[in-house]
Image 1: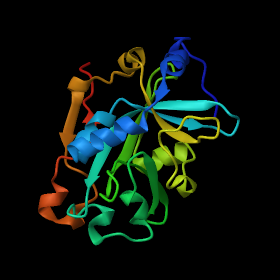
Image 2: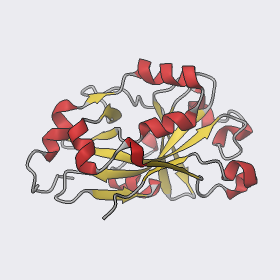
Image 3: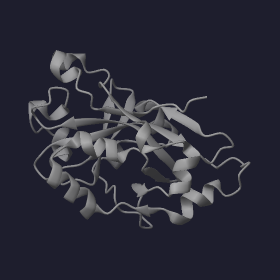
Image 4: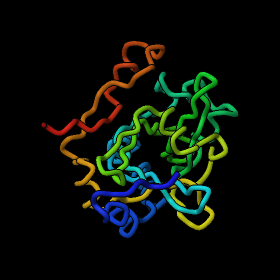
Length: 217
């Protein structure tokens, strides 16, 4: 996948030159101090998801929607039934990917937040591409993994490593890129999670999904 030509020629550079991978130590410190996956899910809005492509180039998209899953007590969380071969990665220290197959069709991308032995993860639900003339949204967790060719081969991979061999990681986003994307902290809204009615009325209504409120026209 190659980037389209731009009306603003510095858009790709805005993301590329000032970006840096998130510190694993920072992520783990935040998780350990707060034990609050929803707070981390809100914090993740506006960060950049970087994907290394087969030709060696790197695509970058700004995260615009997330959803938190917090521990075994959370009946919407995969770990509510305890540690299994599938959920084992959720019990690792924060900073790795949890990728699973949903309904036998969609790969779903989650960032494990930890701390170690506390199963918590954040589902990435939407991205915004600002390297096109008009910022373009990729909405839906299954659509974004398909668009970026993300599969279970990345399950357990390091999300904080941007080295030459890294395939997928999280970066800080430069302020100019956030402005171009229209991603501002005061536009983040907390709403109920979707597709988790099975968890019952209490857990399904937790406002643990975070979205960017559209700008006024």
